[in-house]
Length: 281
Picture 1 (cartoon, rainbow, N blue to C red):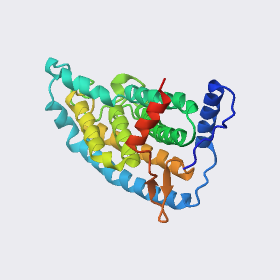
Picture 2 (cartoon, rainbow, N blue to C red; picture 1 turned 90 degrees about the vertical axis):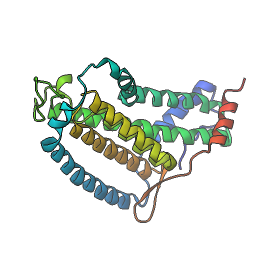
Picture 3 (cartoon, rainbow, N blue to C red; picture 1 turned 180 degrees about the vertical axis):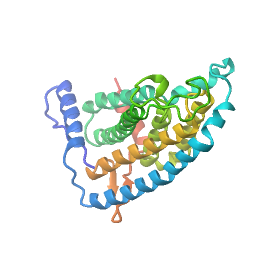
């Protein structure tokens, strides 16, 4: 994996910090260099097509057969006993997730200039992976916002009845921004991205994403098809950003058949030692 190289004689701490940030951004926008990126693009395109076809069919089926009936089975909106569900659903809010990832990125950026050699490389390796997580969520959410604006689907019971086909295209209002679910986009983009970087976490992240999706239904914030569509947008968005990183040899490798594989990341023990060195008095 290519890591930004900060010259050892680059002035003071702030000079090294600015150089590190500049090089980190530059490697994200540089021209792709991986020789197998075309194979990876074709493989990813096939997977995206299959996802769109099968998940799209599921979304249409839900809209016609399930959505209107499902929301009538949920507790009334604002039920006091659902306070814990309202607290839980905030873990899938895009602003909260992006702030958390952004703060971690800032911590890495502030600590890295104070380190040298292997310790700096270890921390920068973590920083590359955090960049991938952040951009996966941010890109997916941005795409989702455009879709919400275009589709303009009313949230459950907007208009006074259980109508799954209540649309005001380009409305741009909160009441008509049900499709797709923003929380589901965030949760599934994060779940896919974390699983891509740390495969052992995939079951925990899948549970997290499904839990967030369920809270949106219980709180009558979305129809079932909304959360399924959100999951689709989140996964495809994270896949797209993964390809972008792999094509630039950042955090991922590309196998001969076009499979994108995560490169070995820094171990937990090494990160603890690096953190101790970075923040030692």
